[in-house]
Image (cartoon, rainbow, N blue to C red; front, side, top):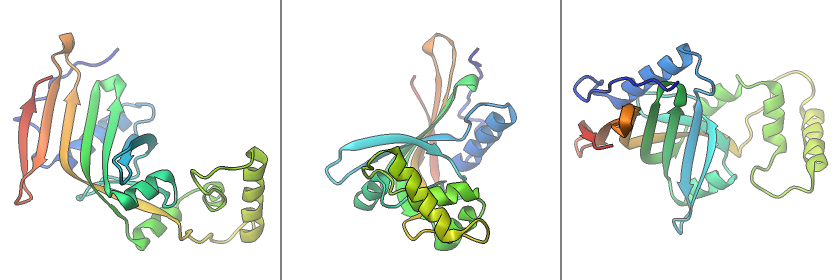
Length: 205
């Protein structure tokens, strides 16, 4: 059953990132499955789009963070065209967040801090996979993982790969969407003004 709650543009937090964090906390606390599933849409230099689901790995005062192989398709596209669109969707709560903004890489320190918290098996997989590149069967991929395991052993730290790290999407437009009955959904948009402040308005459904 999809919830039908009210979203009033006069009552949201003036900072969209604070408001989105509240919604994320609601989803997590309510046991929403895959509350951190984040659609990331990118485009190459010719404006051909592509999209995929990754894991949201943080919201800070600047924007939304996720991690990837820099040489993957999205990594290459973000090098060519450092802008992205994001979508978070929590069906059980009838909520959606849409974001567009500029993208930059996280600092090496930020990437290392996250990398060090990853399971060892995930670290080995990151070293083994040349993400988005063709591979000659599953066996070849598993062999690459075993080669990484032989290289790093079964204990001790595994270094952050030079081709892997984090991205931050800094929003210039962010929309909150709340399901309402009869398709009269509530939509509240934050749009960044020239002085860096946020202009809040209601959109028609």
